[in-house]
Length: 173
Image 1 (cartoon, rainbow, N blue to C red):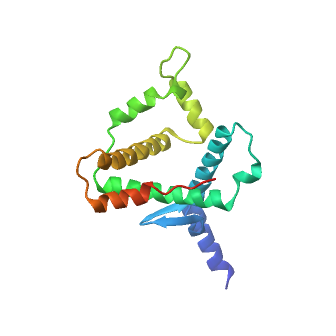
Image 2 (cartoon, rainbow, N blue to C red):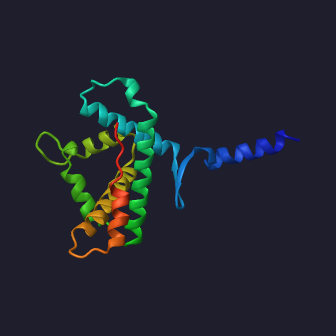
Image 3 (tube, rainbow, N blue to C red):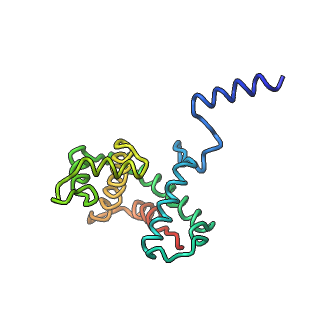
């Protein structure tokens, strides 16, 4: 009696790729997955290694504080992105292409954009062009949303408080 339902539901979740246990946090309708959290944590750890030029104890890179700060960062980012989308912030394709073309990591020895370097970089990061462009577009939308309110001469207090709460939270390592 136990084996048939388990086999059917197990097979169903295997083929559909849905696994409820992989959700780390929820922000509205959006679920932050274990993969997304792991990738963000790895990026944080790499950033710390770069800042310290590799002179950091590996045990310091896997602390509960760093994990908590990373998760809070993901939640904040998602909240800001949600607000930006609701406010109608969009990033045109032309601006996105221009930003990618200006990134030094994608330039060859002559200083021109190299599609081959672009592909190699994305492959080394485990991303597809669509994933990278989506991540860049989201970052630009968040930046445009948060800087848009700061650049105006009149900003309602409620907006300042809300943007302040979302942007002023920082984790320390």
